[in-house]
Image 1: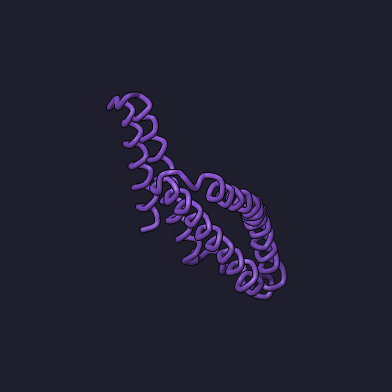
Image 2 (image 1 turned 135 degrees about the horizontal axis):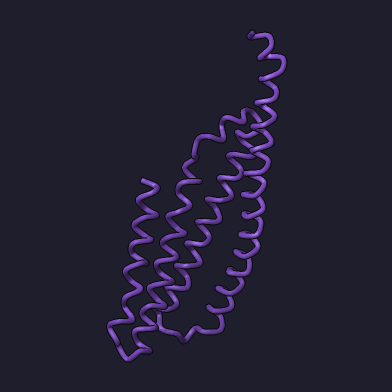
Length: 155
């Protein structure tokens, strides 16, 4: 029975695993390529903002720089994750894809931190533009729930 497995079943299982990896990480690679292009646009926007609006309030300028920095860290994590799975380990053993790397898990942190910063900024702007109506602060609740859920998933 083991000869039949080695001859027929083993290669079929390995081919199915490799095909699954091609579909899964092919999509991840495509998403990372699009994300890298959008990151380039974000870099250009951050540079243009810093040059064009140097008279803005310091807190707003710090917010823009913080979001850009978090985007940079997230892009580095995605790049490391792709290198780790597709170049460093992926060619050796398709079963290796079953284990999560630190950069795959950690990319949630800068992403969620950026989301909280940007959403907080917009909620604050809505609150100011509504003449400080407390009902405009209600979006804080789903933002905090989403943030807590995301960090709960990685722990």
